[in-house]
Amino acid sequence: MENTELFKDGAFTHVNEVILVGPIVRKYTNDVACNLTIKTPRLNMPNITKGGEASYNYPEVAFYAVSASDANKFNEGDVVEIHGMIQPKKKIAKETGREYYNQKLIGMEIKPAEKVLQREFGIDNGNPVEAKNLVRLAGVVSKIATPSEGVISLNIRTFVNGRVNNIQTFMYDRNVGKYMEKYRVGDRVVAVATIQTLKKKINDDQDKYYRNVVLSALYKVEE
Image 1 (cartoon, rainbow, N blue to C red):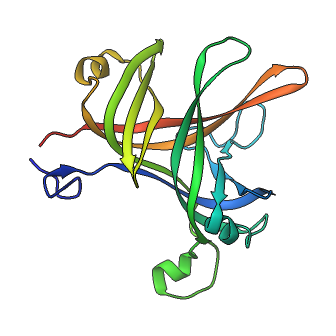
Image 2: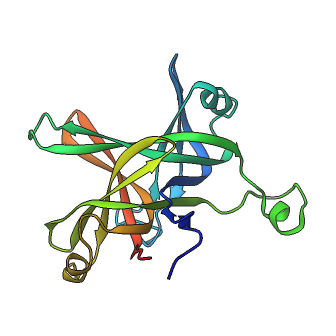
């Protein structure tokens, strides 16, 4: 059955959208871009890690051109709502020689986060709304694999605003077989995900940061 939100004039509508709501914890600007790091709770995980530290994600968003000027008006501590997209770039790891995707978050719009009373009663007062870390994707499966037990690596190719982005996503499930049987390269899918940031130590003096798109829901779209 055709979904009117996904099909317009008979054509499948691609989606590549990131929505973040949370406080700015780091701001870095140069002549090219304004980069903001947003703090959001890590969903579907305990609030406190084994080390006793709160469990959060820290997605970094890069703003360019006019968007950079808008982003530069905000400072650390401001609670903002950001709309953007994912632009991955394939790279080769110096340590291993293996290919990996550096998934950059590109900011398109930024504004102060709505306040709870404003949302519920139209009153511009009180605390900001709850944090949000949401990725919405609609596109075509370009690769599917199981790199390790309980892990599915799925690339979703989107064509939005004249740009093709081959977005690497991950899904964690004990029964990966059901996904490998159901999904094939070329399938049209929609997915909901979050940006999960990881820090891994390469050596005593260097850390490496990852931005993984982790799926929480995946669905094959058929006309």
